[in-house]
Length: 147
Image 1 (cartoon, rainbow, N blue to C red):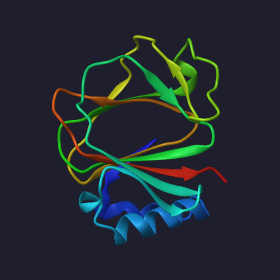
Image 2: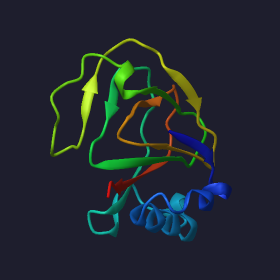
Image 3: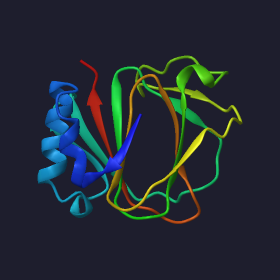
Image 4: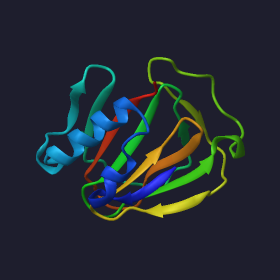
């Protein structure tokens, strides 16, 4: 897991070719101006989901196998919790279509209060619980295919 501000995102070049493509897109795009929904950057290798969800308290952990998540706060108000995948028990069967496994374990993990302009990267070995809070938010999730 990585968390940082968007002004430093170029420091993470070299993780993978698809990550570099995602970083180029993030630096060039006005993410706040994109409409809610899926925006294709490079086929199924890199795409972004923009959303304006109502953040809430919930207990669903998620993890992915084929994609890295770059969660970007376009507004304040969201907290994301993190734990190593191995520290969360009770995973569901893998949902290939949604590229996810879920767990309702109550372990709170490490809280990451997301500030506007901050991002968090979650790799396949990172369990994360996004969307925590009590306000209507605005965020982007860049999905980067694992190479």
